[in-house]
Image: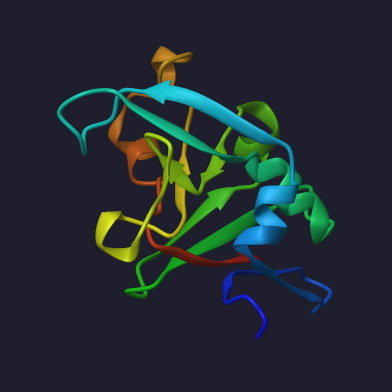
Length: 136
């Protein structure tokens, strides 16, 4: 039985990449300890860099739309992924995230390294329960 697809990445060209957790785990992983407004203490998030996920679909510029399981959607500049070490977090505190725990995927910015990111505009870009990324 094939593994469940947890992320769909669509390029402007119409090509679509469907990734299961094994595919995401094969990409280089980044781990970071991050303070966020959603948790009372710093949390360790781990997953591939968003830029590596975007490269799979040859997305290098423009905007991307992040869409969550509950249909929450937000457009962000793809340049965020190349300017900062934004990750597609699969794990929180060493454990795969479940839907109940804001998973299976959570876009996480490196708030710990960049004070300019610690504002509402960037917190809003942290889509949890992420299911798809579409080039706009």
